[in-house]
Amino acid sequence: MLVDSTADSTALLTDHYELTMLQAALKAGTAERRSVFELFPRRLAGGRRYGVVAGVGRALDALEAFRFGSEQLAILEGVVDGSTLEWLAGYRFTGDIWGYAEGETFFPHSPLLVVEASFAEAVVLETVLLSIYNHDSAIATAASRMTMAAGERPCIEMGSRRTHEAAAIAAARAAYVAGFTATSNLAARARFGVPTTGTSAHAFTLLHDTEEQAFQAQVASLGKGTTLLVDTYDIAEAVAKAVDIAGPELGAVRIDSGDLGLLAHDVRRQLDDLGATETKIIVTSDLDEYAIAGLAAAPVDGYGVGTQLVTGSGHPTAGFVYKLVAREGSSGELEPVAKKSASKASIGGRKYALRRRNRKDVADAEVIGIGTPPDGDANDRPLLSQLVRKGEVVGREPLDTARDRHQASVAELPVIAHSLLKGDPAIPTLFI
Image (cartoon, rainbow, N blue to C red; front, top):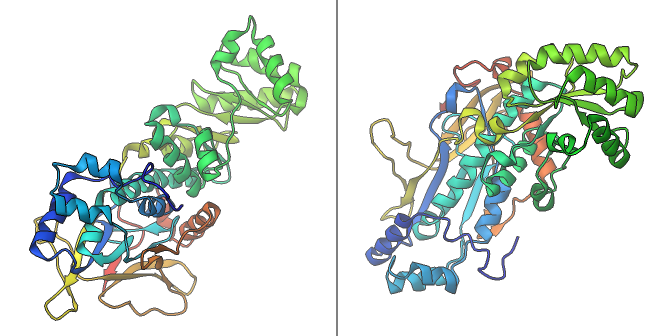
């Protein structure tokens, strides 16, 4: 996504201190020191067993749009001095970036991004990269747990009205990566090609003089394969009217309130008795992964998920950090550097990672090499691929590729990864 102007620049999606650090480094003569920054999680949120990488494609787009034009520079007058503004005017990222591919699972200390460039070029990217990765990976992780709980039953993302309008688009994209089949968000369809779906809300039923008129109008417009919302008034009466109007070809009914498990059993019996044996039952209403798992034995055919998905099901951030782990020393070679802060210590040195797998191709460990790639055998998978080479994006890929990768990555994890209970990560992280 090359940007010809700065009208859509991402350069101000940053924090003030990144530019004051830049200014000080330029004055000190250290701004051009070759440096390695890494984006990684110290732990998994909420005692979850794994996390899911999302936002890679959006981050690459943001990198290409990271330009300081006249509008951005005018806003920064008084924030940094004239020589720093002049440097920013010519900013172009010319370094290299490696990362976990989108849809991949991750564990504590997984080096999800490795950014190698001058200090100046890399430090100003901290906030925009963290913002995208933290949000999208939190949503994808929640979505993965939901689709895992749902099994073969499809999940539809419908949380746009429960979050910021821009976050809603990113959330729909991240959910699709992690296995959701569709979204209600049309902007996600336009921008990222995520399939969309939708039929009607209670307002459509209330608009008409009778429920029958509402159902007749919807079937006339959308066909007998549509989904009719049956809980505006009395569910049993609505199901009877729905089948009477659409016949056994009725596509689905949706239940949006009440005890969904009990109601699904009642509605299934009623539909079958009316001859609508192929009509599906879709449930919505503040679902999360635990509610979905609790409906596993109910005759439910699909789930619509909103609030809990777009808020990360209680964990709206993945907790990633972006730290300097190596920088050019007096010899010209990279030297490890690390924080020693209590509870926030980092591990110095450029990282490499592979997924160690046993003879049955089940993951055993996340193996991280410091300074050199870890040795692996034929069953092991290297996890870092090059995303940017000398400033040029080389790692962009179709969204469906990330979606397929996610499915394969989760499938290779041990059985404990399927647990929704709080606990240790599904596999350990080993440093060598």
